[in-house]
Every structure is written in structure tokens, then in C-alpha cells.
Amino acid sequence: MAEQSSVFDMIGPVMIGPSSSHTAGVVRIGRVARKILGRQPETAEITFYNSFARTYEGHGSDRAIIAGLMDFKTDDIRIKTAFEEAEKIGFQYTFKSMGNSLTMHPNTVKIRATSEGETIEVIGESRGGGVIKIMNVNGFSTGFNADLHTLIITAEDRRGAIAFIANVLANSECNIANMSVNRKGKSDMACHCIEADSGMDKLTIEYLNHLSWVKKVIYIPDIDF
Image 1 (cartoon, rainbow, N blue to C red):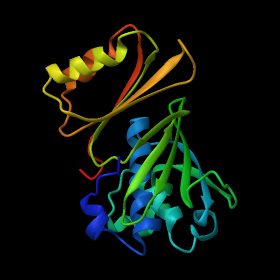
Image 2 (image 1 turned 90 degrees about the vertical axis):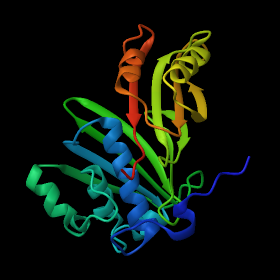
Image 3 (image 1 turned 30 degrees about the vertical axis):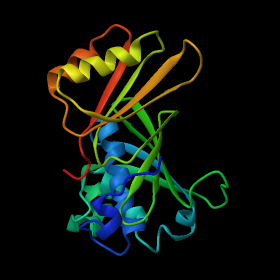
Image 4 (image 1 turned 180 degrees about the vertical axis):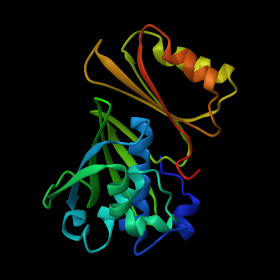
């Protein structure tokens, strides 16, 4: 089934330049990683792939990813001084580049971010016009674009889990737009990635998080709000 277009496909985001692919999209990927971690990273290792690896300094993608990890939006004037802003709060980071990864989209970035002893890993693609796709979270395939409200549930791979989660969300009047499940092996951990048209209430998220077979629940509201 063809992917649905969004307003970003038509007019692009409100942004600080120079490029929707190299700046706005990268900021949005950084913001997703920040929300997955749940707080300001203390350290981050950022790897740019393919086209990004060759252009990230000249096009400002390095500043953009740091800005996103500090939760700046695409139109935040502080993107231009992101390095200085990071220094003020003691946020440390390193950049790496991988120029010839044939399995990766031309504009791919991987983030490993750490805070309070917890480390997350996110792989995202910037697809033009500010559109992004988060391909992988903590080793699980995901494939969401963060334009909708997104729930990422890591849980035991058990019979009936998908139906149970869908029913809980339906009872909270949450309309599921997309849902995918990826697992590392039979009866191993599974990752449920759910995109919904509307926000998810705090009580529902807390209920899912307290189930004995659920390891972690991450909620990412529409990334542009």
C-alpha cells in the first residue's frame, strides 16, 4: 500500500535553513530520539551515512541533530548556535561518518544517546521536505514517521498480546492508524509500534506499562507539537 502524503510532502516544514532534508528532517529525527530517551541526553554518538556523511558539516546537519536532541523545533533560531547551547548544559557528543553503506538510505543518521545510565539507539532517514522515517529503535524495526501519535511497546512475545493491546487502546477511544510488530525471535521480546490519529491518555499508558509482561512503554506525541 502506498504511503500517505502529509503537508510536509507538499510545502515542507516551517524551519531554520538551509535545507529541509539536511536541517529540518534531521532536527525531527533528533527530537524523536530525545523523546524515546525521555529526557536530555548527557552524551550522544551520532553516525551519518552516505550523502549525510559527506555533507553534514557544510549543510548544518551536525547542528541540527544536536538541536533536535535538545528538543528544539525546526523553526527554533537556536539551531544555528546548537553547539554553544549544548556546551551551556554540559551535553557532550561525537560525530562519525560512514560514506558507503549500500543498505542504508542516502540520508541516514544513527543516534546512540545516554542519560542516567540508560542508552537508546535510533536510526532515522530524512526523506526530503522535512519528512522522516524512524527505521529502527533499540534494535527493533519500526518504520514510523512521527507525524502521528506513536506508542512503542517492548514486551514478551506471548499469544494474544496484539489483540489485548489493540483492545485496551480501543476502550480508551484511541483510533489506530498503523500497527506493526517486530520480534527478535520466537517467544523472545517483541516490539509493538502503534501510530494513532489522536493522543493517548496518561492512564492508558500507565496501565500498559504496569502489565507484568510489558518491559517498557514509550509514548511520542506528534513530533511537531
